[in-house]
Image (cartoon, rainbow, N blue to C red):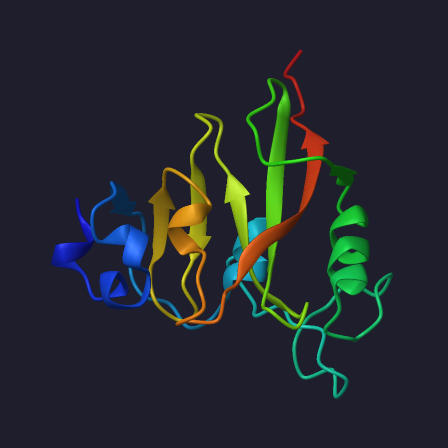
Length: 153
């Protein structure tokens, strides 16, 4: 599928010509942060009023440190980049030009990425760069975390 068949191509220039696939219907009950954490039941956001879910180990502040702490509570550790690493799953935290977290994506076992686009669909995309840019204000993938994929006995 190409971005010409779906409106996000209007916002993400690199989706216009790249391959991606819609992997779910629209759903406003969860967002990209929840999706990166594997939770499709609630909206995750570190708002100071605590209207949304946020892990208790992490401050209710929209800072990179708060997002890192939230995912460290899920067993993730910081890593250098989003390159595929056998035996690990990775997440990427996007920051806008002010250094504020805006989006998260999760790496799939095949090395591609999956993202929830706000209240829209989840998509599978080949690279993180496909969602970088200033028009929808996702900015750039700046922080990466990984955790070991549990092996079955």
